[in-house]
Length: 134
Image (cartoon, rainbow, N blue to C red; front, side, top):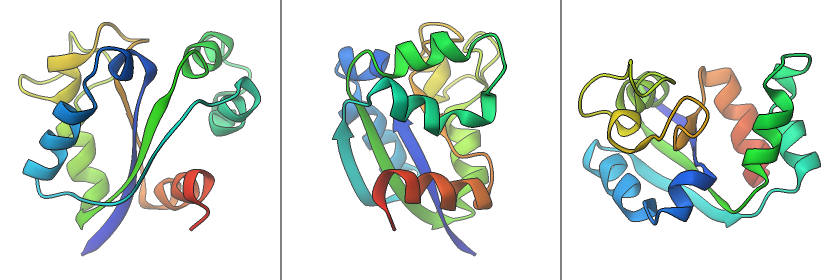
């Protein structure tokens, strides 16, 4: 079944000029980029995006990081997109990420893990609408 999902290239990866390398990995894995934009999130916008983490001790640090410099948001499409993308990016902790995954290859640490990906079809729809209004 063809699905849509969201991937964000986080500030650490944008600052290290990894946009092309990450996008190439996505396209090589069969993802079609259907929408893409680079944006510098304001802190309030980053907090709204991550409101699911409200009350957690890492939220303020996450908001500060995500609003520290531009991110790239992409709506991606392919068969079983959500699960396939989660597998391609790897575990949040790059030390635990499978060999060859995006996070294992590019992440600095758990906080600066280079990418965000939707964790369900339902959240993908919400996150795509958040960034693209569609």
